[in-house]
Image 1 (tube, rainbow, N blue to C red):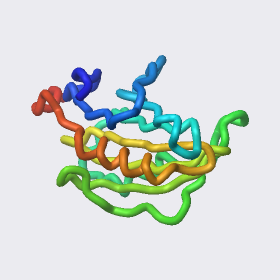
Image 2: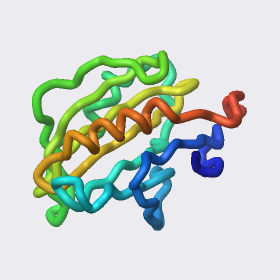
Image 3: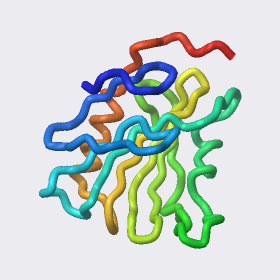
Image 4: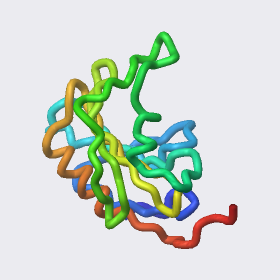
Length: 155
């Protein structure tokens, strides 16, 4: 498990065997970035745990999914193209939504879920696709997420 990360709930995450923790860099949303073992296909492949900006009362993860795909407003950043449809699912009993996407030469999956109306996500992404082993490991990450603080911040 990681140390408590920098979100409201001081989330901890299990890092799958063989994955390497990467520097997060200057970001307000990425809590954790890990890189796949070199033996996986579609390198570089990463899993990101995201604490997304915003408080979303009375909305579902499915309602929020379109925020994360669509035409790019920046000429040097490719659009995020939805592959198939957004699917409802659950993450540790919480309502969630998942979808596959392509963005330039990268492709992947994003799973969104709400914890006390705060939006979180787990993204697995690789070059021209995602190794099935990385998908398995992303599911492991989703199952390992735990909060060390359970009381939401004052609003």
